[in-house]
Length: 298
Image 1: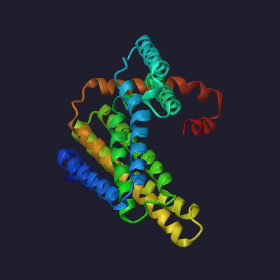
Image 2: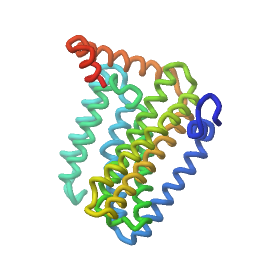
Image 3: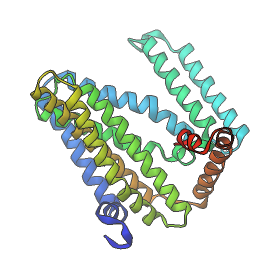
Image 4: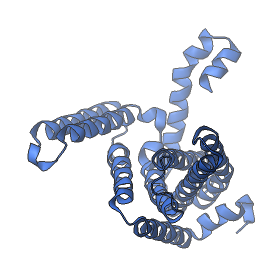
């Protein structure tokens, strides 16, 4: 499994994608279920449901919609207008008796629609992330649910840092998976097959995943809690949450990409994205000094 520079994690996800995904998914699901039972109340279940619904509805649905957008400019424009019109119709005609909080429902629909329109309209800038971005988000949601269950098992279900730590875990976990998608597309565009591209993407994401977990634990430990014990508890919640969400996003995303039938259109989209990036950033490079332009691009 360590051949061709894939490493341990890369080799597992590339050579044993189904086994590694099933083992991780089973463990995280069991951890979430055990934690919900250990909490013994509806509060923890409500937090889990809120995160799953918020992440799935506000971020997941736009990513799914953007993945079906056509590649042409006018096609994307028409598709974006259709999505916006459909969302407006849902907000306007939805009966009040459907929901206890119709205003919150309308706000969620508006936020989801705005994200979908941005992703569809800016497809050349995001490239394959718009077509493959739902994978890391779904995996990060599963990892966050497991992290919340882990907190409950540790007796921290009522901790004030649980909500912020879960939100941070979901965000950083999804970002780690998005980075793996970008690495996979870059490797594939350079001529690697899907197995090697997925394995290298997973292996290269191990370091950033560990780094963000340590960074989150350090930040929460220093900024949360008035006592040393509270700071350590907050650091543990944040670090474990980010580590679980990032690991789930990284492994599941790379495993799914190694199984996905990848065509040359993916490499074409990546080359188009790079060309679009150079085209739109070239005026900035010309207007500024080299050092300032590099800083802006970075």
